[in-house]
Length: 117
Length: 112
Image (tube, rainbow over all chains, first blue to last red; front, top):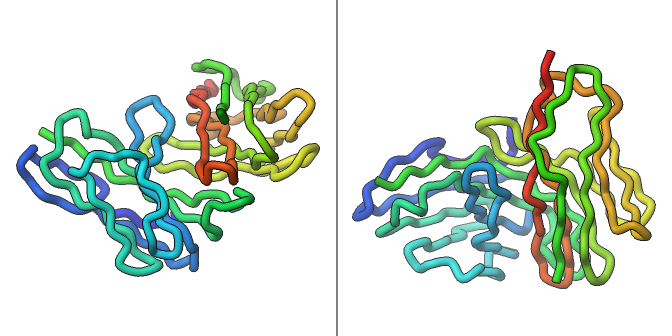
């Protein structure tokens, strides 16, 4: 069982829809991440929150909007997506925020499989 | 810049065979190194890690040693099982960038 919980597991949305992905962890981790993974590829970093503040945005299009309401929750708001945005969206957390030493491993959820029609 | 190179797959082995998946890296400073595994339909799980040169990470029969002189972190297992079939990612964590850099992944298929 994963300690990072993502909902929903699957999502199908049209290009005009607005939807949100949710992620929750109760391990007291100080950093949370959104990754996008295409089939047979490694995960690509989208956003990093450290201590509930956005610390890294990998030039992600504005149709993806992250939100960190508190230290345990992370949302990804989706609006006006394109078919090429279809992918597995992974949330992750780590005990320590990335810094001088990157020793804390990431704990991943099982992801949301998103299909944009 | 920082990068990770993994051997291309897929790797197909018979049960109880010896496994090696090669991973080499390029980095400034003193990165931490990780192996993650992704089973079908799941997210990534940490398999093992090493945070400094000559450290050996181990878990579930898998091992990898952080070799600074050869900039490598090869994954090994003495006897694979069908349940080890998955995609394996080597990754580098660099404090310089605050990011985890993944290799391209190696698919392992173990046949009975």
